[in-house]
Image (cartoon, rainbow, N blue to C red; front, side, top):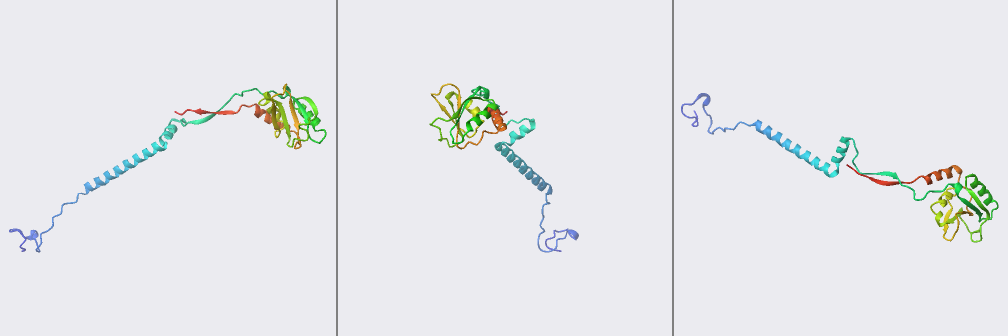
Length: 213
């Protein structure tokens, strides 16, 4: 019997050897499981809170709200027609003097006849005055009074898009001059001119703010 064995105890209670046995506390696995679950819950709540902060600063919450309600609350731009300041005259209300500033004969009469077919009134037809004769290098020059700048000149300009437009403050009356230049070949094709007239008479849309929710 070992000296470590208490008196009166033997058999299976007899301690063998010369060291005291180590008494370990039973492992509490339940507590470990609880700690693991609690840690996972804390991490999950923290991650969810981070996502919510990201949504707030990036506008995700607003988009989600708009999608849930079925309405678009984001501000946008909506085009609305703007009224034209001055009404444009029809071709039949415009008298055009057709003047040839080139060395090619017959251009003034041919051009005047075509403009007449398109509804314009024709005034004088002939050679350009000295100040323009053989001095217009482009397709042509459209001349009119100051009041024609935003009215009759744009209408005549649809027939010869490349022509230069000029106004004369001292000019009397409402007639316009179409001075044919060296670069002139022909008037714009009638379908193209008609399309340009339609677009010219259509008010341009003006952007307007659309309020959000």
